[in-house]
Amino acid sequence: MKIRSPRNRTLTLHQREIENYAKHIRIIDKSIPIVDLENTIFENNFLEIADYIPSDSVDLIVADPPYNLAKKFGDLDFKKKKTDEYIEYVDSWMKQLYRILKEDGSIYVCSDWSTSTAIDLSLQKYFKVRNRITWEREKGRGALSNWKNASEDIWFATKSDTYYFNPDSVKLKRKVIAPYRVDGKPKDWEETSEGNYRLTFPSNFWNDITIPYWSMPENTDHPTQKPEKLIAKLVLASSKPGDFVFDPFLGSGTTAVVAKKLGRKYSGTEINREYLLWAAKRLEIAESNLSIQGYQDGVFWERNSFSEMNRTKTNKNAASEELFS
Ligand SMILES: C[S@@+](CC[C@H](N)C(=O)[O-])C[C@H]1O[C@@H](n2cnc3c(N)ncnc32)[C@H](O)[C@@H]1O
Image (cartoon, rainbow, N blue to C red; front, side, top):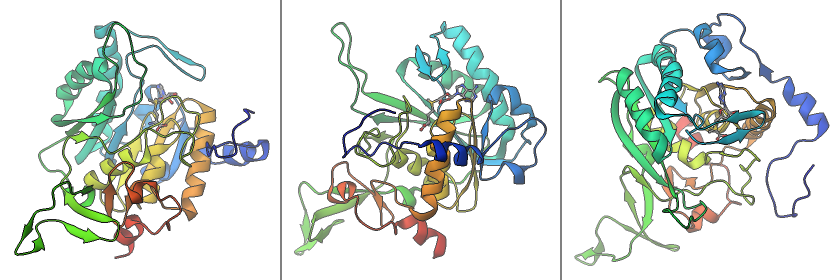
């Protein structure tokens, strides 16, 4: 086990926990009814078992596949492919995702700039592409002969023109730079003891989310873990409480964990057992702690704002309010 600083909150597993969480992981080896998929995580290669998942069964898909670059995911040594080979690879799972998504369902697919073309082309083949969100993620190595990569794309598509979208659930609370008043009263903003804030509608440019890092409790050693705050926006905007959310490339379980915290049903496949064990532990923690860093009282807070940083606040977030109101 790695030696870490006492302030490092990265999730770890002891031998006993490994044995315990292994019991939470299932395998799909034949056609499976939806009820057996729900609220369960599976150690499977999605490409090998996709046929076993029923058609029209899922309300929302969040897919965060290996991007088209060389990357090691445990034993999986993903190699950069030629563009047409990568498109073929994407197509092999995209058509299955189209089949399992409900007629009024939505799908989000993550990518980086060089992977985006393939994702867009494949999505267009099956779905109605509605938008591309750009996430400014700030971290990335500088390069002497190129621009530093500091953004990712999240493609949004639906199966039909009938789909659920709730922008009110994903408003961003921003600090007001120039507070404008009419008749002495704040116009479209509120004065609080922590400063002046305005609630803004979400756009397709997100600069309020950091990648998980060592001092955040959601952090694991997964090489490309997505932040809970990012997935929470997708889940809240494009699914209702009780809906079924599926992730074919589950990794450390972020989609499942967020879906659970927000009162949705979840499922996902992942080939790496260690990642699934982390996912299982995170899912167990979510039983008693619904908090999502940066999301509180039904709104998303700017990066490094008072509430973003205030990790000691209660776990009573809008997830529970939404569920029990
Ligand atoms: C980009 S990561 C997903 C990270 C995840 N969103 C998270 O927050 O932890 C892609 C994951 O897909 C897994 N993977 C790759 N090919 C797969 C396949 N055919 N079936 C299931 N999982 C796969 C990798 O092991 C890796 O963990």
